[in-house]
Length: 263
Image (tube, rainbow, N blue to C red; front, side, top):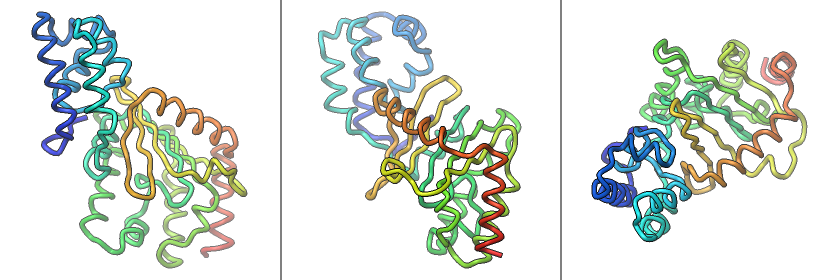
């Protein structure tokens, strides 16, 4: 995940200290990675401030590099609360993802939106709409293959009107058309349980097996990578998915809502 010049300075500071201690120990990135164990490229991302490493990794680095508690302490001060702006880094996470598991309880996932639906959500902002639609290029790329996507949508998402009736009709027809072996849409029918309405989120597994998540809140979206956070979201996702309709029955529900409400 390449974060570029806007990446949080706190991550760069932490990463520079990791690099300093690694250099003092006379280890290459690959050699250090083998001892953790993580891949050397992930060590490089940490050192460049391109990703938030897990605290457990900071503790392991402390042991290997004999920093006497310095790296865990720096992690607590510099990394714990570092959050990437959603419009900056998440599209790049998507582009490197091997798997994306999303749950939406209010609107259709951005990767599955039509241009009209996205425009209605974004108040007609042409630049923002174009940026959102551009993200969908990963769905049709050839090298590397598109990520595997498992999208869970609450039934209310398809009944909640965004834009006009034509917009909703086009969006539901799009959902029926885009299903493929690498992209599945499953509906969560009926009234939601209290935990289902806590907010939307996406789980991402990158090609190097790094796990990240994007969580929406009332204030902003936050990219997280802490193991405990990922574990909790994975459990929530698995629970919701266990109550979702199979793909075939989901298509039937989408078709029924399309016919009953938007035709």
